[in-house]
Image (cartoon, rainbow, N blue to C red; front, side, top):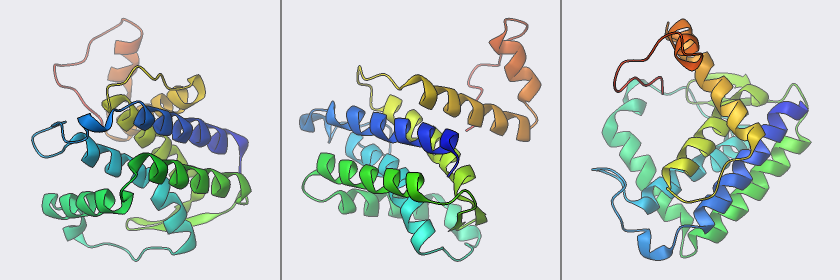
Length: 187
């Protein structure tokens, strides 16, 4: 696979592992949001590692509109926590190693079948890099993402902003030529 996608994903995945390792187990039950605990967030974030391998080895069928319903997202999140087992850190580490090995060994033209359609593995990994960085940051530890992971996360998010019609606004804000409204979010 192309070195840029694989390298950014590896850095983001290793960062997520380090961030999870830095979370004391006593914090697992802490509320991260109204609906999620810290452990829920860890399980959800780890899906970026797990699904890269799953969608490569066992392409998913196209999902219907029910896939994005909040209750279905919550159900997948609960399953992700169960999949962590008794040792969330070891589970996240193992999933990371497996996903990194896939990213490094896959040919440049490798494809994955996601619930939203087939795409190049390299493109899918860019979105997973962003997920790993963002959810690693969400864990609130002192662990900092590596430069390549942070850069690829930013590039991905700028692409999403552009796709949603906000690319120019984001560029202006990043360069001090404008500002974004309170609560602005592209993700």
